[in-house]
Each structure stands twice: as C-alpha cells, then as structure tokens.
Image 1: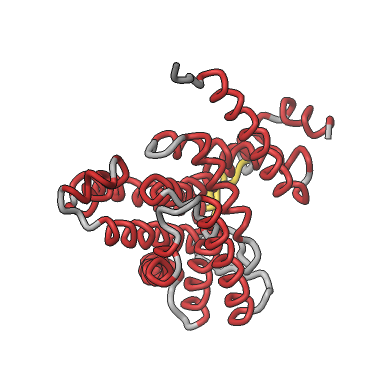
Image 2: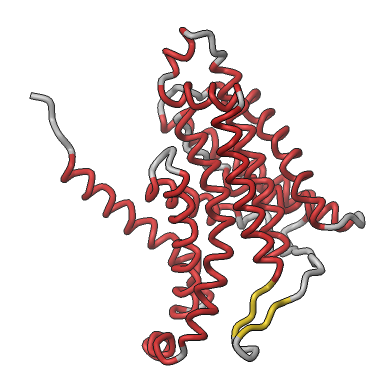
Length: 300
C-alpha cells in the first residue's frame, strides 16, 4: 500500500489518469444522488431502492442492446420505463408510508429493493453484464493517459440532465409545485396544490434519473442484480455531505467521491473499493454528527 501511495507522487500522469476516471464516473453518482435528494427533500423518504432503480435502468438498456438497438437509445427509454416503474411503486407501496415514521419508510423501500433484486435475478440471471457502446478511446501525453469516450459521454449526459432538471424545477408548473411542497407541504395544500400527485411525480422523476444513470453505467462499466446497494450508499453519502436541495453541492460531492474512490481503489486494491465506500460513509456520518452537535442550539 505504501508503495502505491509513493507511486502517486512519483508518477503524476498516473495520478491524473486516476483522478480523470474518477471525476467522469462521479458525474453518474451525482445524477443518481440528486434524485435521492429530491425525494428526500419533498417526501421525507430515504429511498433505499435507489441503487436497484439504477441497475434496472442498466438492464433496460442491456435488453435493448440484445434486441439489436443502439445503446444510446437506451438512455431515454430507460428513463421512460423507470419513470413508469417509479410511479407504480409510489402508487402501490410508497404512498402508504409517506409522511409516516422514517423507520417505516426505510423498511418499505428496503423491501422493494429486495423484490427488485430477485426480479432482476429471475429475468436476467446473476451474471455480470455490460454493453459495447462502440465508442473509441482518446490517448493523451504520448499514450500515457487514456480517456474512454463512453465515460466522457456519461459525464456530458449527466451534466445535460442536471441542467434540464434545474430548468424544469424553476420554469414548469409541476416543478414549482414540487419546490413549494418541499418548502412547506401544508401551505402548498392550502394554496391548492395536489401534494399527493406531487409526491408521486417526484418519486417517478427520481426513478427516471436513476434509469438514465443505469443506462450510462452499463455502457461505461458493468451491472448485476446485486450491485445496487453501493449506488444507494453513494447517493446517501453524497446527499448527507451536500445537503438537501443543494445541486452544486451534490455535483461537487459526486465528483469528489468518484475521484476519492478511484484513488482508494488503486492504493488499497480493487477488491477493497466497495469497503472504502462503506467506510467513508461511516466517517462522514460521524463527522457530520459532530459538526451538527457543535452548532446545535437549545430553546430556553
């Protein structure tokens, strides 16, 4: 491990390669995390099934690829399919736990995550899958640094979706209703906003974001039915670090997590990559709790 750390300082181009790959994949983390922040901020539900939505989006693109469609077509199709899945999930399960105790919503979404895992395992088996995007690789600095074009595409698509989402939330009537409900649901009801519809649409939009993210993941990396939990943990970590409703913070935290995860994977070994993610979550939660403790004020 110490040799690898020393190598990071002795070979700056290697460090550049690791940081570049990490930042590019971090954009996908940020995309999924913003969906979780949206649901958490509006419905007060921590969506444990977030990672399974990402995997399901990847499988939609994979199935289109098997049927002969170009993987790029999978991005909008996966988003549309997951929008419907998310809407149905809300109308059948989530609406029963909205505005209730946080522990109940955690159990409900955890149960959904297990259900989706088993369904994906039954339909596509537990084998690792990926699709060939057909894109090439750029070589920089005399072939010492490589940039996979599919990762650049993933970064660009994530950025475009984030911008479109911001415009949607600020300009559309539904987006303004979502923002109003997030700020004060009772006042929103008084003003005539159908908050139940807002909750359902927010949950569906989150699922659509996860579907697009999953489509990018299956093109840039690999998927399997039980790989969703790390994406849930990453999204939770990013939201806790950035705070609810803070899109620039979510993007910065997502990119930072991607870079840190890639560096840690090189230093500790690829087999410890997920362990690093879970360990970092513990550190962030402890640090966040300590920070909040110092700023907590009591009414006298």
